[in-house]
Length: 245
Image 1 (cartoon, one colour):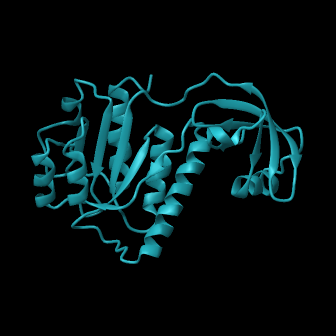
Image 2 (image 1 turned 45 degrees about the vertical axis):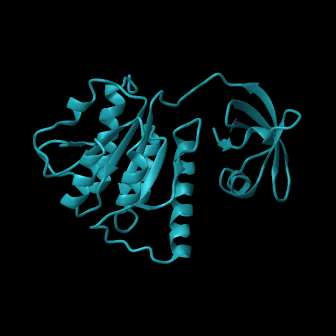
Image 3 (image 1 turned 30 degrees about the vertical axis):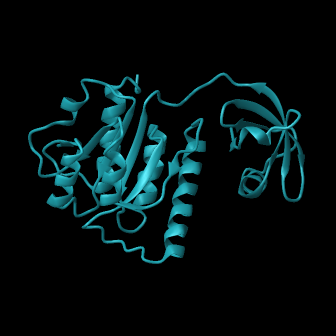
């Protein structure tokens, strides 16, 4: 069933108006008809709704029933991802939204190949990634749309995380002793998973993370691609916290 995300104040008198790309998708791709059902997801509730009227620029739906369902994890996982080449970031966001990751921080590192010196180009990337997050949230029946935050450098990320009451996990290919499972014996509410780009992290960056108490871990004997490492680490965290039962 199609899922429409909107703010609480978009609901008026038991109705909601579907607009913009969502309305176009319903009309042109899904061939929606008056009388069809959709799910309407607000910041606090989910409803079963029925299409009342299809107009030129929007679609009017009436709310029929509140759905008592929460598909969100009890923990908050943020993936801080070194920006990879080509369209890999789209795959990373798509798969991790399906898994339950709640936010993403695109990361510029010492070895990041992609250069986003132009603000317009940077914003286009962010808009595209946020669109991917929204589409994946619909597909996986999330109750929220995970947020893709602004691009930051490693130094800016370290400055932000140093005062966070969270578990910071940094998989590193040169670490061969401390395993991820070793740092998950005491569950936390908030987790930050920090993944390097294709070339991995520079040792100076690893030292910066160590200084704020981050856990530098190995994900096993085999070297994982940047697009694989994040979803593996997030999956292990979810499992250890009882979110994959």
